[in-house]
Length: 134
Image (cartoon, rainbow, N blue to C red; front, side, top):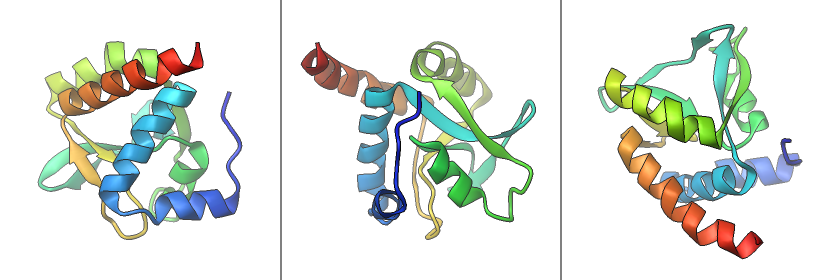
């Protein structure tokens, strides 16, 4: 279930520098077991960043919806559970040579990483965060 996020928290997270948004994304994705992007049916938003095809992702649906604006009208936030992301999405994105744009914001800045790099970050965070919850 998606956690609650007020407008102040949303603005604060989205105003972080891109590298800090990356760290925030990893922590939130692991803590809440959710990754969000934008989809319209089976069609997912794809964009070009740093000359690479990218899937933009956020840790919360409100962040994805705020970014979508008028440019992606008709697309809605869609959840990808972390286990599915790790088991299916990242290998598929590697095969498709699709990168991941982490939390693009109004400044059009985001960290763009390969699926393998993101997987390493998520697994490292899982090892750090998950044992503390037990």
